[in-house]
Length: 387
Image 1 (cartoon, rainbow, N blue to C red):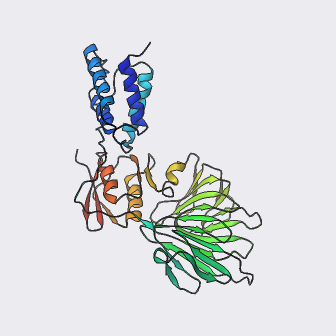
Image 2: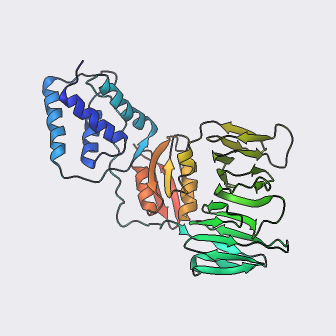
Image 3: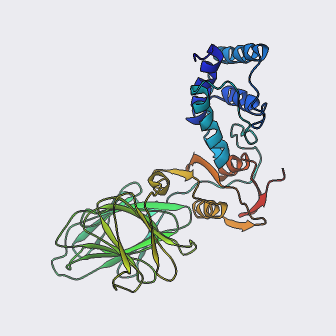
């Protein structure tokens, strides 16, 4: 059955909404009509209603172009909105009720705010000397044996070898609100997230390449089959690789240590054990989750975009994240203390840049209707939204 012009226009607007490309006017229009019909009743549109609907959609095309809205949704709302496109494609001319509308995100004025993090870290040399990297000038920074350490705009790199075989260990540490990139002496690249540290030799001299991680980092390991690369984690577990791309989240306040593989192959070793059954080999797209007792479970369909969002400069909240995990991410990046005054059971999804002030993120989350925040100094109090 052929669709009417109003159905075609409505399908187009719904598709733009799902893709996050709808203007504020288009979004308000769709939400108005989604809220007008009960799912159980399934009202078809009367001719007069369809004519009014078509007229409003035409008026939208005459409005001056507006910036698209930020994509933000509660899980059920997003899925219902997506299903509207399918319903219209099937020729169904009625709408399904959704949750409460989610307005355009605009940060409120005159509120206590927190600036986003940035390239902040300090380097501890083998002799215990500490260098604040965010205030150090670009160029050659120091020498460790015959290895030259260089700093350039949020990146630290090591060049050269130490023929003496003497090992000089360095440690790079990011505070809350910090991040940094590192190029090791073998050419491997490491991106360090906030509140993390990596201990490593200025030059790799032995039969393997070993680094020690706390917190979170993304690795792109240079292939060297003669010298395997190993990441040692708190508690003695670790990840063994030859050459690959992977992310490790080993924050002490997270319930599990998560290793996610993007490319290549790695072996995840349980804490203090090389016994059969105490390690898992990962393939691309898989994630190993290691619990406090050393048990390892495998997620075969890891959300790779969500895992690597921090490295790409954004927050990406999805179905697998609860409010506690979201707030742990925000606490590290904005250097704030978080206190929960209510249990938030809804799962909230959305995406926003990590370069915005905290108030914009909080406001985005509040617009879901599931949560609200109160700021006291550098403490963020999380409360249930009174509906």
